[in-house]
Image (cartoon, rainbow, N blue to C red):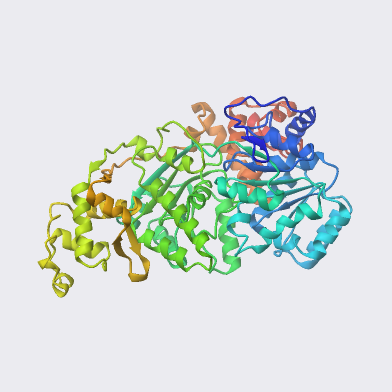
Length: 617
């Protein structure tokens, strides 16, 4: 989708008008520096707008090539491009990758000494650096802004721009201060980029940065290579163990809600024979850096992390993301699963959640230091995520509908692959409401299920609940199914969780409609577990011919050696897609090597001889 101000054109359904001649020069830069023959969807439109001096808000899925939207213009514009990035690790990765391409790039951040930062700035002032990365806290100081003004920047690129809306008011106030850039540098174009923004967030970003006036490039949110799965939380460690056992040797991320749980799950996976590392804000920074390096440089490492990990992690071969707990919002969930399968090959994302997850998320919202309006919006976002979790039909349709995108059933999520018929739940839901009413709306799911099933225990006897009319009316329904029913009643809005009363379930106004028969309740039983493995070798994923698999493995070994020598991730040398192209086409000369996907002039000069020797053998 591309548009000016509030007017938008959907790129997937409309003919895009002819581009200006400057795009021809951009295509030459794309080929000579980055080694790509053609732009992806949306890139030409964003680049053309920048080169024409217009501001741009770009929303593209993770892995769709957002960085090229500012890196290509940066190499064409006469002057400095400043990239605002939220995380030091993200800056370092991009700077290293650009330098391997022969691009003069640098970063000024708190991980470097003052002398190192001063040396970088001297190169900037001398015109020796084309692309400079900084955190918003570093840029939005009077001293730095004055220094930048003297240079006269050619372009500002604001990466992970959703942070303006999600972090600005509280955690990262300097992100909100980026709204001052347009006033200070009125003639300098600004591009804001994100993979995660619903309509409300998009409007908020545009209003903050551009006073609502910017060209919008929206290519869609679908990541068709991701298989989406959600399961009721039953035996979490066993569920995780079963999931990763089929993926030995794959890189993956396991997200946990707390630091303690992160440490516990990492230790559990190590005990099960996996290479797993914890990552959270409570660890010493040097330990976090060491674990990040191992995850980026080695194959088959599982990173067990809180949400402190992940933003901007540009590792293309992450084969899965597993959520042990419910994320905060659909945006957060989309951002987190977006780290899987950035290379375009199949990847799986799996979430576990239960009633206690909903209670915790509601509690976090209520305890947040924010006004009632923000809390209301956050509850609405959580409701949208619960609707995704309980989707009776295509899960991908439900997720993308939240971002305003309509698709046909995907055929690749769990609800498409294992369709489950909904069951008439009017009797059981009314029995549950009767039990909640009779017990005074003071108890959580566990005790209510004991009442409904006619259990005999100390708590039932202490409160005399065995004398209630509803006692035992649901004895023929097993406890697991009752948990499913109660969870889906919460997700459908018939029940609320009273977070001030230890998670007691309470009836909502909508419950009265159900009791009167004005509302209908059908629930989705948990599908029966099937033992199946989607484990595939990387060669199979890459669709290599059998005779090319051994060569591909030797090319990967050379790539790993080169990466370790330089202290960079393997993909920064060449991606798997580039190695697949090499193994399939088997170039024998320098010019032929230069035609391989992802081989620009700088990498051709640095690496051609080494890879050609392997290819020749």
